[in-house]
Length: 630
Figure 1: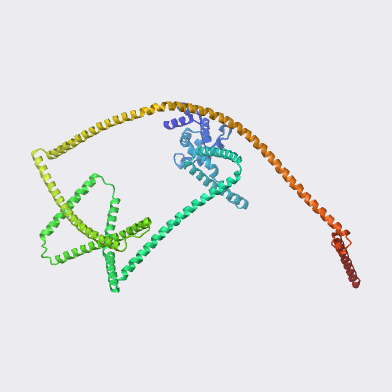
Figure 2: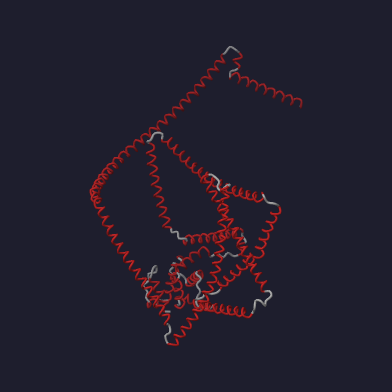
């Protein structure tokens, strides 16, 4: 309990509470003061609870604290039957109730802040079912639930972004750096535009540069397409060569072949494939499965130490010794001549071994043939790409075939020798095992004799001393050689350093005045550069003023041109109207009636008379119909 109060006092004295409690003052707080401290801690978690409890009713304070503790998922100590005691203690400010709450809140303030923040948006409002019968209320509540789900998804995305390693400070720094680079580029572009504007025909030159860039991009794309088409052509040529080689092989095989020989060859291939499928491959598959099962069993076993491995090795040795003893007893007990089936079994085993050996040899030969064919195709392609000609044709190919046959015979001989050496190696290995066993027995006897005479470990000590002396002599020799080599290397390095110093001495003498000259030139360059910058700034300001004046004059010129064109158009329109009026007057005054009929005035008069006549005819017809009706 004292540790709990100590932790509470330490946390309350820190930020953001800044209390000046000690164990005595905190323990002597009144219930109302203790409730105020609890309310301040709750206000730190949820700012809505920043209320002075002296201005609030006790039942309202208890209800508010109960609701927030329920949202924060606080579980009071004790059973469910003690809930009434807990509520009463919270209302009255009891220390046994308030202290555990403060300890729990101050232990996980950050987590509870997050939980209180989420509760403001995720704790759903309880709406009575009779109110949900209204369509408007139901739609509003459905929108509210959708917004809650959207807030959940956005909060998850925000947390993922916070935990992904991206920080806003880094992003802001990157944005500021990119904005600075953008401003620099804009200034650089403006300077380049100002320089280009002074050049005559700069628009045409810019257009030509743009066309050049487009053509370069097009050239790159065309080069890439060309490379892709070359690769496709190369692959197609390889496929064609393989197909031609297969066709050539088939034609050669069927050129001098008879149906009987083809059938015989197919039967041999069928027999070989049948043997591979029915005998050899199932045995290999079974052995692989056994190996896999054994490895799985080994993997499933728990990890073993050195003691377990030593026990297993001793058991293996004992079982191997028992097997060897049983084999020797069986060989001594049974006479091979008495067994009638022994010779047949031996012959069958020999034949099966030969058969398996031949099958393996044939399989290896086929694989070797395929590899050689692939290598031959690659070499021929390389040779054709190199000089564009085919290789190994006619007599050369025959000579190459004969050479290959000679090599194949040599290979067979070497392979036979290798098989004999392997058999001899097996015999020697078995002999080595027997000698090791004998050596072990002799060692055991020697150890027994040493123990009998009270000098146990004499032989091992003697061997160890000899080995150590040999190693010491070797190390002494190596050290001597190393010291000699190091002394020679030191001498060489000293000589080389002296040579380099003597060679660099005149260069250093020449370099000193050059350094002084470089400093003088650098100072002169800085002065000239400052003068140039000042002149350039003055010229730049004068140029900007002149550009503004030129821009104003160009705008004024453009306005005057527009006004000129407008006045010219109005003049042409007026002249055309005057011309039409003169032509109308000429037609109207003309003595020729045909010419006069072409006038616009006469045309309008005729149209008026026609319309009047039509109106009079319609009135007469209407009057006639009315009179007949009466």
